[in-house]
Image (cartoon, rainbow, N blue to C red; front, side, top):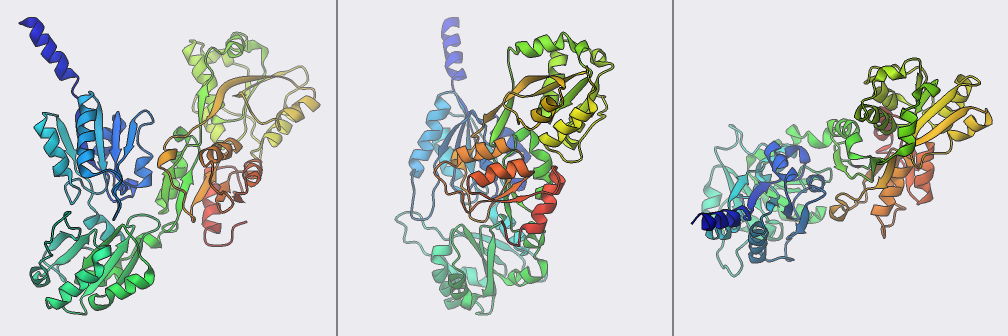
Length: 511
């Protein structure tokens, strides 16, 4: 009996769990905290076309990713097969996240997906998401409720169930004193407008079609109901779009805000390592940009690093330590900590850093930097060190295994004694590359030549001649130009200067 109970318990342990997670309309800032927490623990992610690019970049690198994206007239994976995928993956004992645009229970067919799970005893949870009916009009300056305009809001799907002849009840809809929000209705826009007008709705009733809401590419057409189809066709709007009918639409010209932000119409791709991207991403998002984190490189401390081990045992040899990157500084001090070497063993050594970010990485350890060049380049740093390091003194350079040679030339010419010790590797990173699609108006930020090379590898087969690259320095820009990328260069080699340059050139010509 005990053996049977143990076997049953073992079988139960093999059953996984499914989370239906609403990803919101697209803006990653509208993705819920709980949704992100669940997604970060996923072993399998089954996702839709309407999930925003920035949210897709949050999927764990190690997770199995299954694209079941559906769009009007094209269903790569039938709904029944999606349901079966969720069941099969859960039966494998996996933590499965079903990631759906908007909210899974607002025309997201979430209920259908749960039915098969319930039938088979699979545990599940539902994480609601911000639905497009609230967020997309809000980003277009349309409050779906307003005391002076309406007393209710109604959500309607214009997408018929396969084989259904059922028509919308326009007679009832036209009599409602409220805002009507139609999902998946662009292809039926003419029928919707005609149906409401035939049912007696005022031809001058304000109405709107909202395309790609909450993204940098969002567009809107506001007009009277009687001319909405004509105006939408003239603007050549496409899906995903939301249709809103009601007096609240007249408020869009008064309450518009999203496109008024300094970068409200701009999508920016950040390619620097994920752990170093927060400051730039936060600054861009604060200015309204749609930010996609697409790490092109990753830095990894070198394991079994004998040269570093030997160096740490003879730190008394050095009078100077120069850091060419924050990664180098972090790897060096982390190695000290792992080997239980007290920072007091660095007493008497003077420190230099190539720029402000690297300086901060050193000084957060309680050690002040004495030397920093005015221009944050390898060549300028090398020349400054060559002047500062006295004859007979020895310099330690803990840096990347493959680093710029610009720093070495001035030191060699000046006869400086130095040890160039590799402490980390730069490797190409392709996290989320398969889900990423480059758009014509994108601006791609590059903070080093290696981020350029990593991005080019990710975009193999893509014509890069139309890409606009915002580079942190001349060396980075030279690398980008090699691949035909049009570049602008920040005035200083820091994040704030990159943002300033972007604000200066976003609407003007690009090199």
